[in-house]
Length: 252
Image 1: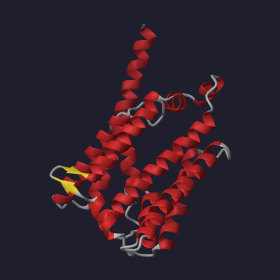
Image 2: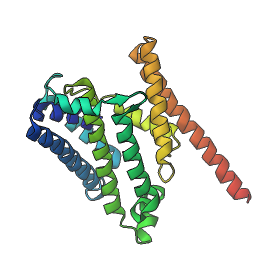
Image 3: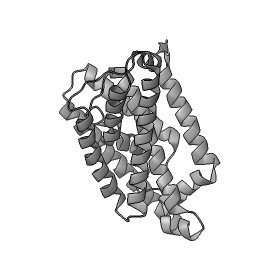
Image 4: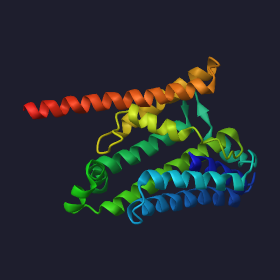
């Protein structure tokens, strides 16, 4: 979430309206910073032996401070031409949907059609066993952190194009939303289980719920409560289904 916010701030500060060079530098800066963040997360969690939760939580706090250092309050200006292209649409079709489709196809192929993608599932299931079978667990894990950060950069650029400015707090809700979307989509937070399409379906559900509650004028407090409850319910359902599977296996 903080990386998304920082990405909007970088885009709004570096991209100058009407300047092609600044546009290219802005996009490059966003992805470069995201890559470095993902690399730092991966190195911290795998080579520095810092628990992943602590690593990413610390990075979230750090990036939140950096974002507010770049833009203390919402401001700056995103390149107008770039924003128009990113927000262009024709009926129900839009550039943002096209970008989602492209990212989905790339990650889907990576996860299901490459040895590295299969290794991601193996590491999620049991990193020690995967390593004992020849999987370069640390390298693959670092790569997944980098990919996640680059996806956050894409989201940041889309948001920056939508609001036309940078906002150091705009990505605040995306941390909980992303976890909830993945859990609802069938991804096990314990690792090793989940599908890319399921996560996207979960994200659509969360998005529709948020839009519906905003249209109805429901207080943001209750929106957080509902999303939190959805996450808890998803975890309970997964835990119960896992217990059933274990019992069936034992009987067999």
